[in-house]
Length: 383
Image 1 (tube, rainbow, N blue to C red):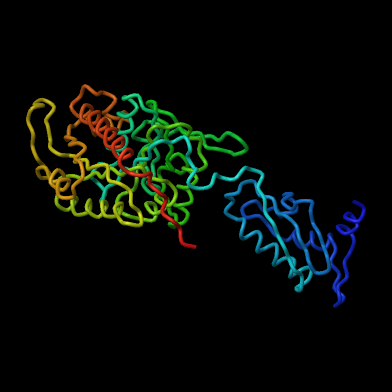
Image 2 (image 1 turned 90 degrees about the vertical axis):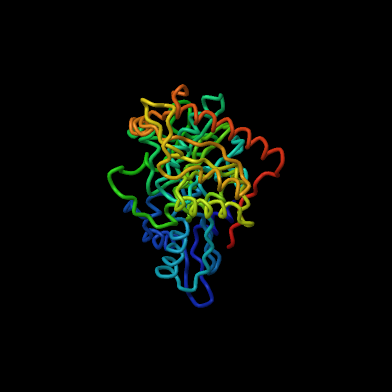
């Protein structure tokens, strides 16, 4: 023990006359500041008490609060540069890192308590995909299932308003050595959205990498617990977000939403193709025809086909996938969404009943998929 203390605290001379000693190294590290705090890494006690010096070889460990700290690589590089600049340009620097928080579980065991992960997608915006995702989640819960809902639209989150929880602010709890976000619960559904963490009146000006990292945190750093269905409300089109999802989660199946319009159907084909790509290989559970027809509240038996008739039904037959449901346009569906009370909370209404039938068909198709196909694998990431 005495020899170790001597090695740690005494100056070390090298063949070229350079002397390295602990204070010199610590003074160099004191020039490295952690972004955003104004404090240096020595002041923040980020340098563990394991500094070792042998000739020109310097080794020590840097401590971070979380394994997902975005500045780990930059702090390591800055520490090495500081030693070369202020101690010796010839120093051989070995820096290890550790975190105070337990690491995020490795893939594919990120959400061990989740049975089925369903992506609700659309080829284009404006077809009511989020409305379908919200009401599907509520209807599944009404059928007795444990349901989680993740708003994956980082740049246009809508779920907080649709569930009347715009003022909610999720908190974190330390669970098994990890600080986990506790999802907001509303109408029997666990829910998270980036909308809980940003100013709703300001645009989210993030590059793709920042958005994808935020999404990974909402998935992997939250306490989702045991769920029968984990609904992903994905952004419209195909993007970095979709790629992140298939690289992070073994998605059980996808539900594609479209209106009967030909322009929407063309984009729906692209959405189907994305999931059926051999590298992605996520099964299509079926299609949902939203805004299938307009029914006046005073005349519930009348149907007016505003956007074309049965275009999604024809696409389902063409692509050989199930038609899960046809959702009519009724005035109260918009009013319920704006008021934060999904229409499916009232299954006796025309639209509420349609969503309840949709949920039952999703359950049937998911069970069939699980019986006939192997579990989905995560798309590999090339390094």
